Length: 106
Image (cartoon, rainbow, N blue to C red):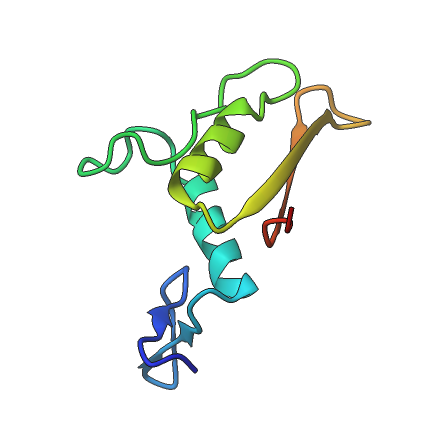
């Protein structure tokens, strides 16, 4: 465990103690990316540019441009790639897959 552990996201307690994650691990980076993706733009008053555009009333395949921009801006440790596709059985449902890994060594 690192000298300064980070609170796990989402914040949770087990046996009365806050769950923590080690800094710069895959779990911590993925949790940070998840926090970005689950936050609609403008939701955090102190950081109005944090998050992604709200796709609630979007039609067709959800555009992942906003996800790419937000993750790049707010979590530079993540190397992500996103895909989106329509549900095979329900035209009103879109799926978005975000893969997060370590930046590639060039």
